[in-house]
Image (cartoon, rainbow over all chains, first blue to last red; front, side, top):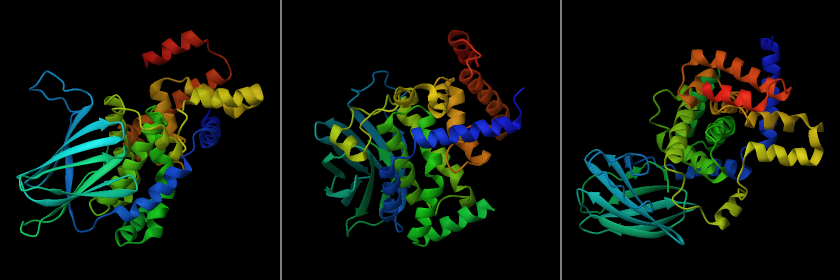
Length: 156
Length: 202
């Protein structure tokens, strides 16, 4: 019968094997250390409330084409709907702020950010955006009320 | 003790202290990585889970209700992201080869293959490789639990419970049973097909 002492020893041996065969990649460690600069301290968080990749739409039985993904974020009364498409060079984004408002939209992805403007109907588009984790930061235009909003990070 | 420490680090990071953030990354990266790997995600998907989890923490430093449990928060977040990717049939399209090369993740990982490669070099002289190979053959449930338990530094049971969404009380007995299965495989006390059927039943 295997005792607790033997179990602990086997677990330690397995821990060493994991460290050898499946360590955290060094690049990822460095990347995680550096993302500290991405943090925002003055914005409201818009949480991911819908993702067509995992949330099933009970109403429509027909699934959309797989290469078109819909995401929806919510912060208070504001929602940000996003359609993500795949292109040869990355991801294409088409977004809509509801209720409609003009805003500066910063798309944070990879090591950099892309800046676009949402028009008076709250629409914006951008691309190509590199695949991987992405977050939007929306700053309302000067004439519009309300705080800046950042979305949850989502890999696209 | 470790808990107070973690909440101090979160507090200092929130105040803008980069060294405290790096300390958090050092302490919990192994745990976050093990959650993604425990769900059998390939290198690129596991990298997405890992990066997304840390990025989410940057936006939630001030919103975590119990900063002392930041490890459990990270484990839970990594589990949610791993499940999202696993359920979403992974990425819509594979990332460019160039991106993967840049990340050093070009080869798609499997514990079996990693072990086989090592075995080829040194045949069965290498017990670590045989152990890792045996680990790769365990049931999905055993692999997921053990992979998190063997992350470095060793996680707390609260963190393991959060990583797998299981009660803390079930960890001990399952761990003992999975380690027994591992030992059986390692010592060849069990025949391939018989144990595979048995494992899947659990």
